[in-house]
Picture (cartoon, rainbow, N blue to C red):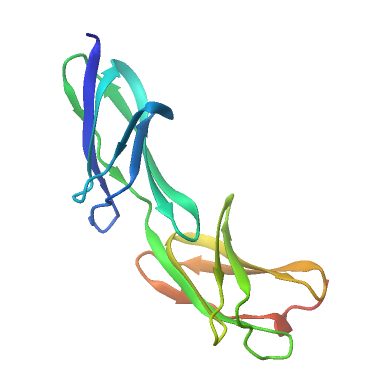
Length: 174
């Protein structure tokens, strides 16, 4: 039949299984599977040869999280490919206006390369980004008063939360 089976487990770096993630091979719709509660997936009837398998986890605040790996499918055999999401961390803080008061119900973004996530501040001006790939990123706010973006660098630690308040008074108008 010239086909084989691909199976494996999707996990976070901590070893926690990722359930409900979408897995697919070579971005081809007919090869999709969803990870089970224990993070396991199984895709059958894959053509033999070299492929790329990817697992995607929907992120409620923006860009989905993905992990990918090569897979060599052998006729009539099962190939095991486990996928691990990148290390994740969290960012929280308070958004302060130019007058020093906290800004409520205001959209703020977290940008990392071509990925972005957004949150609205609460009644105390607090925002929170959860499960973001660790590394360098920028908080971004569009300052309507001056029609320009304010960016603040932030380093997201693996497995931890960093607190980064954004105070617009510290950023001169453009």
